[in-house]
Image (cartoon, rainbow, N blue to C red; front, side, top):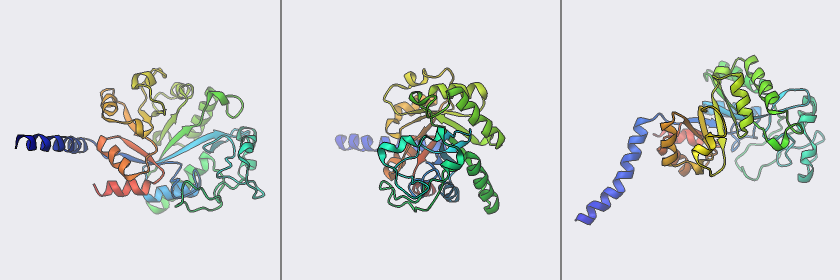
Length: 300
C-alpha cells in the first residue's frame, strides 16, 4: 500500500506541476516559420497569406539585402538550389548556388527567379506554385491588405536579419549598415510596434538596439552553452531568448522567468514536441505547421 502511494505521487506530481504551469501562463503565441513552410513555399507571399488565414499572431521571415539596397525576404543571401530555378526554368547546381549572390544582384534580377515551383522533399504537404522572393514591403502591404479586406486583425512580423560574420561585405552589408537599412524599412512601413528583430549575430542585434532601444529583440541560439554564457554575448537584456526547442527544459524556462525574459522556441513541427513546449509554458512557438499548433491550442 505504501509503495503504491509512492508510485501514485511519483506519477501525479509532474502532472500536477504541468497543470499549474498551464494555469499560470498564457498559451504560446504562434509564429509561422517562413510563413508556413510545411504547407506553402517558404518566405513567399502565398506562405504569409496562408499563415495569416490560419490565424498566426506572428509571421516569421528572414531578410537579406540586394545590390540596389532593397530589403528582400530570403533565408539565404543567394539563390538556393533546393527551392529556386533560374528565369529560364533551369535548376541550379548545388555547387553553383553561391554564385547567385543576392547582395550583388538587383531586385529585378532576383525576382526573375522562380522560388516556389520546385518540390521540397522535406515538406511533402507543400503546395508548390510559381513564386518570386518578395521584398519586406511587398509582404507587409499584401498581408495588411488581406487582413483589412477579410477582417483578420493585425498580424505581427518576426524579422530575422540573416547575418554571418563570415559573409560581411561579400554576401551582406556590415552589421551597422544592415541594421540601419532594415530599421529604416520597418519605420517606413509603420510596423515598429508590430515587429520583433531576431538574429544569431550579436553584432547586428547590438546595432539594432542602438538605433531603437524599444523594439523587441530576440537572441537566436543554436548551441549548448549556458544561458548566462549566451546572454553575455550582448550588452543588453533581450526581450526574447530564442533557442532551438530541444534546448528548452524546465531549468531554462525557470531561469528565463527569473530574468524576465520571454522564451521563444524554434522550429517545432511534431505535435508531441508542441505539447511539451506548451506544458513548459513557453511564450511563443515558431513552427512550419502553424495549423497543427493552432489546432492543439484550440483544444486546450
